[in-house]
Every structure is written in structure tokens, then in C-alpha cells.
Length: 209
Image (tube, rainbow, N blue to C red):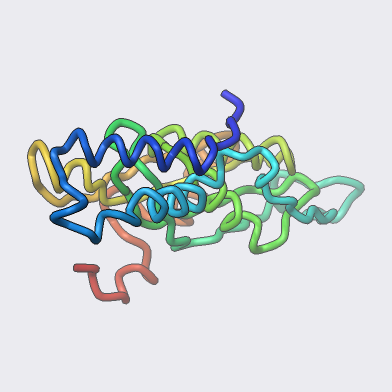
């Protein structure tokens, strides 16, 4: 589904003001709420910026010869991995945050992107009401369209506040994987964090909270 431009700030302000009234909150008793509709509108303009097609990042693409002949060979295939990209997004079901780290890998087939490209894609697809599973597919699809790699993998590890603040009210890490083409081969398996195992860089950092 193609992204849609975000609604107007005025429309968001009106909706938030109505929500405040629906919750039974009184701005006379809590004057801090008077500016809340405007603050939320500005917040949503930022965290949902990925809904605007004009915000799609322009990624640099470079030719890259991976084999000794006129084209890359399977034996000389190379791997590009960008690990531990922090991200945050909003759960499309409850409009509360989920956040964590992304790992993006691909096996080039003659073309690569700049090293900031995977992080820019993670940021772009995170800035909209989102499903973690769909976000991984969107990042992988974009990479495939852009550089047509031999294989691509996107691993997302995230905490979901819709699980921690309601329902079961337990903290946990949700991991989703999109693995395609050459990235399904066993020889590349060690390039990404294993199921339930964080990457070395992530393990070196203290746990949040």
C-alpha cells in the first residue's frame, strides 16, 4: 500500500481536543492541557513523517564489482551488513510506541548503496503507524527495488508498549525476520543475530529501563 500524506495539523488538534473532552478531562482544572492539542499535532507531524511520499529518502547507489570477471560470481559473493540501527515506531493497533534495533544485510549483485542507506530506510518506514512484520518487508522490498541484490535480510528486535502497558503487561522483545534469496544460505547465517540472541554490539550496552 502506498503511503498517504499526513493529515493537517489543524485536524489533528481538533481531534486531540475532542479526545481530551471525551476522557472527561477539564482544561480549567488542568491548564497544562490547554496546549496539548498543538503539542500532539507537532509530535505527530514528526513521528508520522514517513506517511508523506515526499519524505522518501534519496539513497546514493554505486556500482560494485564483486567478482573477477565481467560480472559477480557466486563464489566471490560479498556481504554488506549494517547492525544495531536504533528505531522507534507507533503500533498501528493502539498508537503507542514500539522501539528497538534493526539489522539489515544484503549480498550485492553489482550495485551497493551508501552506508547510511539502511538506517535511512529504517527511519523512513518507522515513521508511520506500523506493524513490525510489515516494516521489515517494506525495508527489504525497497532494497530489492533499488539495488537488486542476490539476497536481503532484515531483522527487527523491538519492545512493544502495547504489550507492556496493557493486556499481559509484561516486557519482552519481539523479533521478526525477512530473509530472501542468497541470505537464506547457511554460510550467511552468522552475519545476523540468531533467534533470541542479540548482536555483540547490543550485548555490550546496558539494557534500557
